[in-house]
Figure 1 (cartoon, helix red, strand yellow):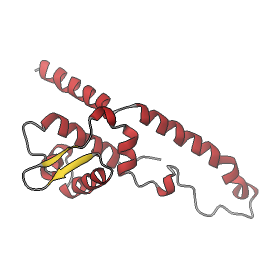
Figure 2 (cartoon, rainbow, N blue to C red):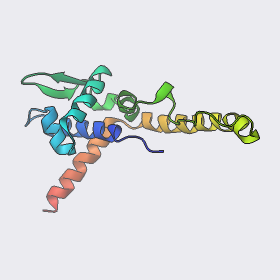
Figure 3 (cartoon, rainbow, N blue to C red):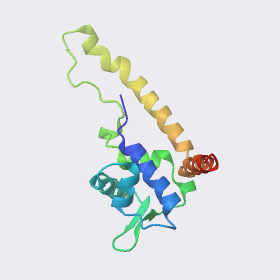
Length: 149
């Protein structure tokens, strides 16, 4: 299982907004240059983040900006905004286990609650980490890199 790159790209977008907001207009083209993806990918994510109330996008001269202070945005907020998790379930269960097989007939009963516990643990951890935590670490890494030059 792997969570799609939409989640980490969204966090990358926030880090760019934080780092460059005073110096540049943060367009999808500018952000795509940092992430190294097609601007269409960035535009889709910006739409999702905007719909979730996490960013503002001003057409024309504005670009993207945070709609809330980073201390009020958790990794779980970002994850929920950009991930397409069906029915809120992280794990996709194979569709048709063989009902003629005793394992196939009972695999859901044996596994579903455990998978939900794993998902809940991950979401609980994500809820404890704010965007401010990530941005602080990002700025520290950038400062360390600049000091080493």
